Amino acid sequence: MSVTRDEILVTLRGVTDPIGGQDIVTAGLVRALTVDGGTVRFVMEIDPARAKTMEPVRAQAEARLRALSGVQSVSIVMTAHAAASAPPDLKMKPATPQGPEKIAGVDRILAIASGKGGVGKSTVAANLATALAAEGRRVGLLDADVYGPSQPRMLGVSGRPASPDGKTILPLRNHGVTLMSLGLMTQENEAVVWRGPMLMGALQQMLFQVQWGALDVLIVDLPPGTGDVQMTLTQKANVDGAIIVSTPQDIALLDARKGIDMFNKMGTPIIGMIENMAVHVCSRCGHEEHIFGQGGVRAEAEKLGAPLLAEIPLHFDIRTASDGGAPIVVSKSASPQAQAFRNLARKLIETGQA
Ligand code: ADP
Image (cartoon, rainbow, N blue to C red):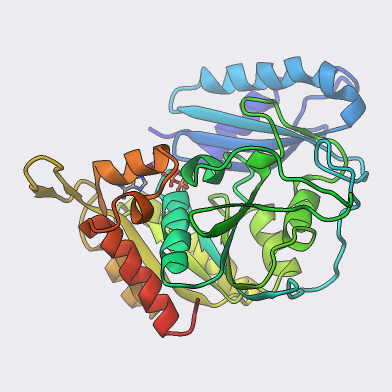
C-alpha cells in the first residue's frame, strides 16, 4: 500500500517548529509537497538565520516519514523565504521578469516533464540533448530538477560555473551541450539552504542570467509532478512545448495525465509523449520482456491526440552510460538504444520542434 498525502501531513503535524511552538504544517513551513508512490518530497521554507536551528527539525521530519510504511524515500529541501538575492556564493540579483519572456539568443524552449519520479525523464533529456547536438543543433540543457539535479552526472560535467562580472553566469559544456544545473551551484551531498531567492528565484536566474549564447533549442529538465517549478517556468519563460515521459505502467500514466492537464491549463502545447522502459532487452541474449506493461503510453497518446514520439527500451547500457557521464547517444552511438534517441531528435527537427 502506498502512503497518502493525508498520512504524510498528519505525521508532519507531529513535528514542532522550535521558534513559534506550532507544528511545522500549521506554521506554514511545508511547501510544494508531492507524494509519488513511496517518494515524498517537499520544501521547508525557513529564515536563513535559522538554518542551524532548523536542521534537526528537518532531520526529525525525515526520520518520522521514513518510519511510515509505504515510504521509500524522503527528500526535504530547505529554502530561504527572505527575499534576498542569490544562490550560494553567486552574488547576483534575481531576475524578475513579469510575463513569459524570450531568453536572449534562444530560439525555442522545450520542457521535458513527467508526472512521477524515476521514469527516466532526466535520461531522456540528456540523450535528446546530445542527439540534437549530434544532428548539428545548438543545444542548451537547463536542469531544473531542484530535488535531485542529475544532469551534471549524466553529462559528465563538474565544477562551478563562473560569474566574472557578478551578474551573469557562464554555463558549462560537454558532449556539444551547454549545461546549467542547480547541482553545479551546490556541493555534492550538501544540505541545500538557499540564501536569498527561493528555488523559484534560482530558476529565474538560471533562465535569464545564464549566458546561454545562440541556441536553436533549450531543453528544460523539470522536476516530476506539477509543482511550483512547472508553474514558474511556464509563467516566466516562453515555453514552446512540453514532452511528457512515462513508463507504460498505470500509475505512472495517471500521474502523466495530471502533468498534461497542468500544461493545458498553462497554455503550453504538448508536443507528444515518450514511452520509456517500454520493453526490456536482455543485454546477453536479446530476449524481450514488457516489464512495465505494454502499449499504455501509445493508448494514452492516442486518446489525447498527441503523437507518441518514441518508445525507448529498458536497457542496461542506457543506465551505465548515464552513470558514466556520457549518455548512450555519445558512448555507444551505433547501438539500437542510441538510435532510438537519434530518431526522436530527427523527428523533432523534421517537425520544426527543435
Ligand atoms: P527521472 O528523471 O524520471 O527521475 P532518471 O532519468 O533519473 O529518472 O532515471 C532513473 C534511473 O533509471 C536512472 O538510474 C537511469 O539511469 C535509469 N533509466 C532511465 N531510463 C532507462 C532505460 N531506458 N533503461 C535503463 N535504465 C534507465
